[in-house]
Image (cartoon, rainbow, N blue to C red; front, side, top):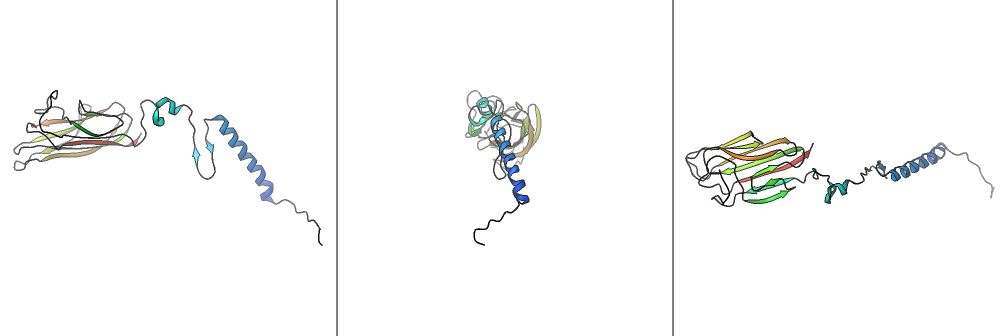
Amino acid sequence: MLGTKRHCPPGPSLSLGLPLALTLLALRAGWAQEGSEPVLLEGECLVVCEPGRAAAGGPGGAALGEAPPGRVAFAAVRSHHHEPAGEIGNGTSGAIYFDQVLVNEGGGFDRTSGSFVAPVRGVYSFRFHVVKVYNRQTVQVSLMLNTWPVVSAFANDPDVTREAATSSVLLPLDPGDRVSLRLRRGNLLGGWKYSSFSGFLIFPL
């Protein structure tokens, strides 16, 4: 009849759903107050708050001795043949210098010494391309990890001018490890214009 009220017992979803929702709300409120615990948001997003992290490292939120992942990279080239004042050893055996820095994200490359110093622990990729000018020259270029030669490349074709010694390698580095190029055999007295040296962080460890 019109106006008749029907009383239905609460179903399982109603009796369980309300307490569960209240429990989740209480947990969210507690986590938000703590400030350092994970905060559960709607959907599948999980955010971990770390108070003071950004202040410790300045812009970008990286702490001292750290860099944002994927933001360490360098590229340097040789734009002329002759050694400028202050460069020693390129014509015989010594460090190979690069006078023009194209990229130096993270500040790891030192143009004065021609070497890269790892700012963070991780796996890095390096590549070099060193051009000799004269034929009948045999040159050996090694990529050095601190004082250890990791890989070497040769340019020794007597009939080819402007031949290049080229190689690449992946290396795990610790903060402070130094990577550079060294001429281990021959000379670059004719210059090494168009040579290049580059590297970047693949992922931190």
